[in-house]
Image: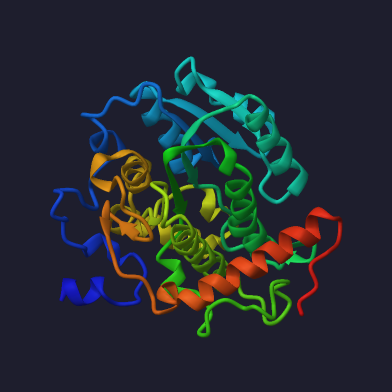
Amino acid sequence: MLESLASSRIPFTDRFEKVGPNGLGFHTSAEEVIQSLNLENKTFVVTGATSGIGLETVRVLSLKGARVIGLARTIEKANSIKSLANDQFIPMECDLSEPNSISNCCDILISKDTKIDSVICNAGVMALPKLHQKYGVELQFLTNHIGHFMLVNMLKPTLTKEARITVVSSSAHKVFSYPNGIQFDDFSGTRNYNPQKAYGHSKLANLLFANELANRLHSTTQTANAVHPGVIRTNLFRHYSPLLKFGSILLEKLLFKNVGQGAATQVYVSTHPDVRGISGKYFSNCNPRETSKHGKDHMMAKTLWDFSERIVGRITHGNDWIDS
């Protein structure tokens, strides 16, 4: 029964996945993942660093001596978490919905000849109740996918020889995305906007981005993978209705992870020796898992990359994206 649930499209069923051969699973915390590691002389970029699993990722990496560059929408927010990191922590402003903010952040890191060992694409917005657009692009897709697409590509000159790119996707790419996958004719989100489906759409894009990036890095020792952190009670739920918020509280103890457990998979994939050289995979509960059929669609991933380049090209030149 539990195995059939775990393989289904029902949300939260990662709770019933078996512990993997590495001994890690649903209850593993980020601290447990790296308890034997020394991350001194390693540099990590973490987006969405000031709350939830992003903040926990910063804290845990800092405990092990890493230099963490924490990105947030404003420098004030980035500065607010200094006390939870070590003295090597570097706060930076990077609004993933604003191309100029991304460019400025990357230009600073490149100008300082920063060497980055891992980029953890953690930031995200979830299930906005009403359609919001920026530059003509639906805001969840713009922030969760296009912003990270632009950031990672601009940071390429800073990446070390064995750099790891970890993109936070979600099981929502299976559960809530559109039946035909990426909506190449509706990046504006104007056709029958649905908050959950729009979020799932952005998470499918995250997964396909990681897959295509891995494909493009195949001749190098750099890697790219996607992760599902699990369902965590963080402020991602702030846009849910009062009824759904109440329901999430009831489900929390049984099905939700705490932030330490939620951060575990992205920390594992970004740091652990077991994952060295592994690329183009999708991890949940610190183990490789199956994706949806669209998550394995190589042509969809290539097409998304091409469209993403076009979107970035248009919005960086001050033009709204027009579906075509």
